[in-house]
Image (tube, rainbow, N blue to C red):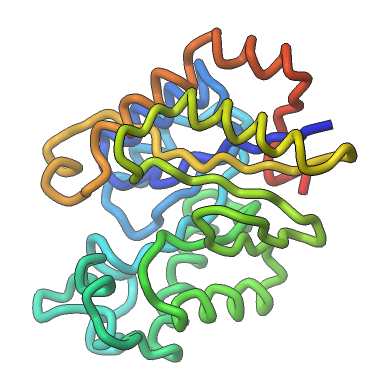
Length: 252
């Protein structure tokens, strides 16, 4: 049987994103949500999800907004304004400029803020994607230190999570992205790989567009398209017809 985890990243990025994620949880198929604890809109986002049974994870972020750590202690990942260096700076760098010891300080600060906001440890632990091996090494080390369920970053392929092999799909940045078609193709292709239980993860970034997102994110229109797909009864009906079981990180 195919077991499908549909995850939403970026709660807290902006209020528009929060509203789209909340709708995708309450009226749609999202069962696991990654939160950005350093962002000013995070409390707004958590308030929108109050009363739901959504599985919350830490979506660790070091490329948008201000850090929770004193910027003078983490100069390798901050700029002269005390904000994180942009994702563009990571992409264009010729080598990994992230200092491991510094990024661990910020990862742990965001972990502690997660507990402060929610009252519990994250149900899973992963990172907002940037081009830095040291960032992902830091995430892995902090996850080991606090015995957290680490979810490695990948755009596709198979990743290990808590002893299970999980096939992952994240295509929102591709040209002409159609969320429903991408989901269907992912499920149908995965169905040809094994006859035993397949653990699948479809990573989404649902959200509505506001000024902050339009100014600060290269991922815009696909966010709103994913909200529509996740809340469309046709999507759930198709998955049920295929015999797909929806799960969360609690099931891994």
